[in-house]
Structure formats: C-alpha cells, structure tokens
Image (cartoon, rainbow, N blue to C red; front, side, top):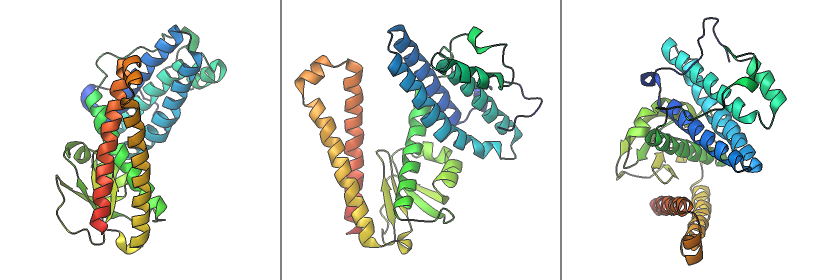
Length: 290
C-alpha cells in the first residue's frame, strides 16, 4: 500500500465511510467477538480457522480489491478513508492472529504506520463501539453475491474481461445496488445499470444470473450459445435444488430443531429461505429462455 508520509492512522469519521467500509468493520467486530469466545472456551482450532477465513476471504479477496477503486481515484478524502480502514483492519487482524503466529505478526506489525514497540503489549481487539452496521453488511453481501454470480457466468462462458455491457437488475430492494454502482462497473463489468422491481421486457439475447436478492439480465447472447446457456442454468438448478433439500431436511428433523442452538436453527431457516428465492429465480430464467 502506498502510504503518504503525513498519514495519520486511526478510524475515519463515520460520515466518510462507504458501504464496503461498514461491511468490513462489521465483519471485524463479529470475528473479534467470535474468536474471543473461542479462546475463552479453549477452542483453538475454531479460533484459528476464523481469523484465517477473515484475513483471506474478507480482507484480501474482497476488501483490498474493493478499496483500490478509491485508492486510485482523484478523491483525496475517500482515498485517505480507504487507507485508514485498510491499516486499521490489518492491525486488528494481526492482533487476532498473533497467538497463533507470533513471529510473523510481530514482523508485519512493525511495518505498520504508528505501531508501538511490540504487538505483544497491545490491547486485545474488542468490538469498536458505534462501528457495527448489520443492515449495511447485509446490503453489501447482496452486492457481493451478485458480482460473484456475474463473474462466474462470464468465466463459464469464456467472456473476455475487456468486454463490458449494460445490465438490467430485477430486485425488490434497488437501493444497495444503486449505492454500489462503482463496484458493479469495476467488478461486474457494467457500463450502465437499469433497476426494476419486475422485468417485463424481452429476454431475447439476454443472459441471466440469479441470486437470492436479484436477477440480472445482460445482453450478451450474441457472445454465447443459447443451448450452452440453458445447460448452465440447468446445472445451477440442480445445485440449488440440492441446497434447498439439505436445509429442508435439517428443518424437518425434530431432533435437530429441538437440540441445536436456537441461533443455528435460525441461520438454517434463513439459508432455506434464500435457497428458495434463488431456486425460483433460476426457474424463471430457464422459463424465459424457452
């Protein structure tokens, strides 16, 4: 990361944060709480797995890539906000990782701006008060799911990354997508996006992607074979049906519902509902292609 000499570490003002910042800070609070609980119960393996997942899948795979958009922009204030969040989250992650990898975390910590003499004497990360946004976290997850679906579709169809297209997004909740237009342009290769609660236009020449929160209609049929697209959707249909059956079997098992922790049961119910929505969207996409 290119850090200016006058860089001042620390969390930025809340009003400077965008949805990706709120997402990663919320996830950091969650993982700090979970790891602390694991360590207090001597669940070392679970704690190590959680910080590993956070660093690779949340911080590296997503947040660093998302932050590059602002780091490379002409908006100095937003670039500074992204740097501050990047450094803050990395510092807290290193502290959470320190019990498992003391030497490498010490070395990396010493390279951070404003670091203390040693990471060993620093306070254990606690949830940052006022930096927890469950709604924004859920909204950004919708954006991530949609971007993943678009990129997976393009990969399967061997569409070159340089090829960008317009797209229509059918969703009951367009606000998160409207806020994330810069990310849709960068990571979903969108030139412009139209939002609708129910798409009633022609699907001729359209490729479709589905998540639990949205369906995307992308005019790229000229780049692909219709039969291949139907085969891809049917493959997704089989996968979605298996997921739905798995969650339904768990919820239909009285012993699981009675004995499992209440939060786990609620999580399974939520996953079951999302799986139902996704399956319905895929079925609509297949029907639209005829």
